[in-house]
Length: 419
Image (spheres, rainbow, N blue to C red):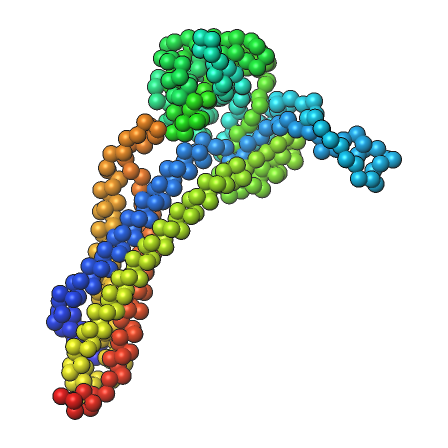
């Protein structure tokens, strides 16, 4: 019965100052709305930016690196093994980019339970011949089906059909930037020169656009068999093995394991793209900081309104305490008022935040550099709504707690005697 009476008094005080109550509730609503919208949009933007690279990057890449030997002949000598040996102008060892016994490695990787898929690849340095001008380029020989399944290859083909790369012999999908430089269209025949001086003619069957201009000016794609033919290599020739894992967080440990097991170089996605993770973390941190600031500002607004309400309701508080209400009861009344504002304003904020995100998600966003993006990116993460709801309750509770303590300590005799 006592709690019903406290709730009834809280309701009366709320509606007695309806305009101020609505202002406080609107402040909370606006803060939660912007908090949800800001985090959802920034997270969607992070996913978009990271996806441009990370979706196209293997979790673990196996390859052979041309580098100088770690041990020089003098280091192997028994006579000089305890000496400090200084060797200058060290040249790379006589090695090849080809991964030896690649078929056996691929079969072993496919049998690993941690692996989602394996995509072999060949990287060929070439020159695109445009009249008397040679443009530097890279042709990636890929398994079209696996590249599409694991790295969304077909989503970045903006002209032609990606499957033609597999079905048409001696075909190529040009990077959009390279195609624009060469003024090439679908169905045209282009000529490339390998690093050994061999010239090969290829048919253009499509255009590729990753959204990163510098990459699209250089990279193009062909089937593995076509890349092997361009380089004059046998069917077993593979320079890279791309591995997609079920859990990307396992990539650093798995890369070290594969490097030791297969005697090849291995790099994980975290190491290869650490700058993107850093950028995403900073953008997310800024979003949280701005969102929390909005909630704290709304809390100060509620604090000021309740302070004014207490000042104006001194007579009512004195009467309540004179008629038997304890300081704790008065404390509960004003905390109930604050929580009512927080819950009502927070609920509307969550609803409006979801609605605003939905509106933003349907706004057209067309840019030539990002052909796969049609609208502004939004991420609907329940975590943001939970954080917003919890913060709205906590900030409004604290905003009501301190004024309520002041009200609970009021001496009714002094108030009544002053009147």
